[in-house]
Length: 196
Image 1 (cartoon, rainbow, N blue to C red):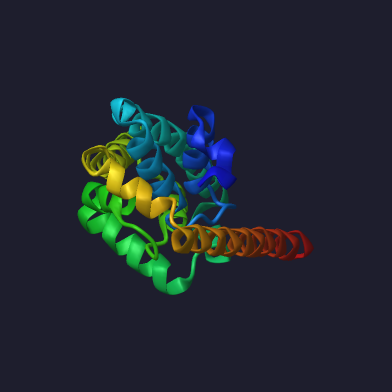
Image 2 (cartoon, rainbow, N blue to C red; image 1 turned 90 degrees about the vertical axis):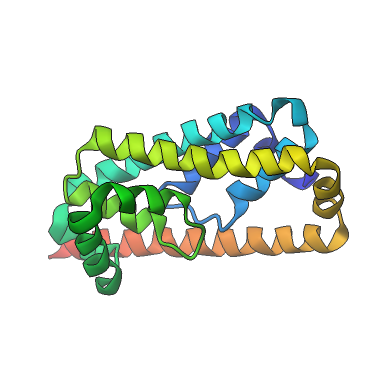
């Protein structure tokens, strides 16, 4: 984990939370792994790390929400698949807050960014959206922090083992590839729109 030094700082954790909820960056399980590692390494501060990553997540989600509000319902099809879009619309209309909370708690492959964009485009009240999103993220990272604080020594041994280090490097490669694809998709859709 030492290879990812900046993200193992307080500011790095806030930035990681923001990037994780943004439109452009793809970080499968990265944020969870860093929260767990930091809580296991500094068990006396286990309560602080969920707060930091949640604060970052709120910033990233607010920006993504604003993009969704700007592109509107018609623009969503450039960023969200039709299958996901229909499901999100139905869930937001039928069970609203519960769906918003679940979106912030569920791990990949749940398409969090697509859901945040859809919430913005459908004009879900921003204060309600961010409050529910924040509470759900705090619940998710808080549970991870408590478990990491409790089982810290064992978790550190696992995280610092050679196989897990290799998996982490693999996930970084996947994250970089996913981020490049997300940026290309956004760029292509904006190019198509400006040409039209």
